[in-house]
Length: 401
Image 1 (tube, rainbow, N blue to C red):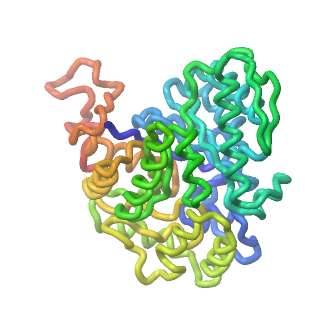
Image 2 (image 1 turned 90 degrees about the vertical axis):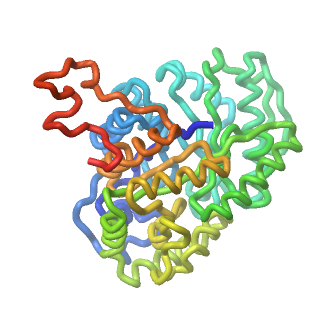
C-alpha cells in the first residue's frame, strides 16, 4: 500500500495568512467583523493554473477543489485546468442534493473524455443547513445522508451502460443511462463522521476521507468504517485531509505556524468559532473540540497543530515540523491504513513547493512514493557535474529547497 499525495486548489481565494482567505470570502463569517488585510490572491484561473502546474511538476497525483457558495464552481474551474496540465487528476467536490444523479453521471463521463481519465469525485453531503438552504436544499442532516445513499446508487447504476430504473424516497429514475459510461470510472471520495454517514460510505464509496484528527481517533474511524464495509461485503480505502507547514527545521516550521495567527485578534476568532459552532456537521464539531477556541494548547499531538481551525471551517489541523518530522507523521497515519493524503497550506503555491521538494523526497527514500525525476535528468553532465545539479546542489533534496 503506497502513499497517494494530493494538493488543494484554493478556489475561494488564497493568501499569506489565515485572515487573507476570510478577507476574500467570509465563509459564513460576517465581513464587517474581519480586519482587512493585504496580500489576498483572487482565485482567477491564471493563479490556479500556477498551483495546478506546480502540483503536477512536484509529483502530486491530484488536487482537491472545494464546493460551496463561497468559492468558484469546481466542475467548470477544473475542466479549464485540464487544458493546461497533462497528468494531474482533479478531485472535484460537489453536493449531491443540488444536482440530478443522472446529470452528474453524465457530467462525469464527459469530463473523463475531455480530461483523458483524470477525474476523481468528492461527494459532500453538507453539514450546514444555512449553506444548504442557499442552494435551495431544505432537508435535515440525516435525510441529506439518506439522499446521498440513493444518489450514489443511481450514479453507479447509470454508469453500468444499460438503462437503469430506481425508485427511492428521494429519486425515481426510469431508464437512466449515459450515452457512454466514463472510462475509467472515477473513484468516489466521501467523508462524514456521523452515525448517518457511516453506512453510506460502507455501501457506496471507494475512499473514506477524514479530517486530520490525532492518530488514535483516526484509527477509531478507520475501524468503524472498515467494520461497516465488511458487513456489506465491500472494501473501502482511507484518506485524510490536512494542512502542512514543512520547513528545513522544526523551529522554522513552528515560527511559520505562529505567523499565520499574527493577524487573528480575539474578536475574529470568536466570530469564526460562533459561526462554525452552528454547523450540524459532526466532523466540524470534532474539529472544534480539538482546540476549544483557545490558542493555549494548539499542538494536540506530536507535530499536529489545530491553529487553522480557529477560523477555518472544515479541515482545521496542520502537520507542522521539519520535512523529516512531517514525513514521520504521514508514515504514522499510513501505518494505520491511510493511503490518500489530501494536503494544503497557505499560500498554496509556495507551500506546494515546500512539501513537494522537502517531504516528498523523504517519503520516496522510505519506499512510500516513487522518486520524481527532474526534467534535466536526461541532460548530459557537464564539467563533471550532473545537469540536474546546477552549482553542485541537487534540485530536489530531502532537506528542502
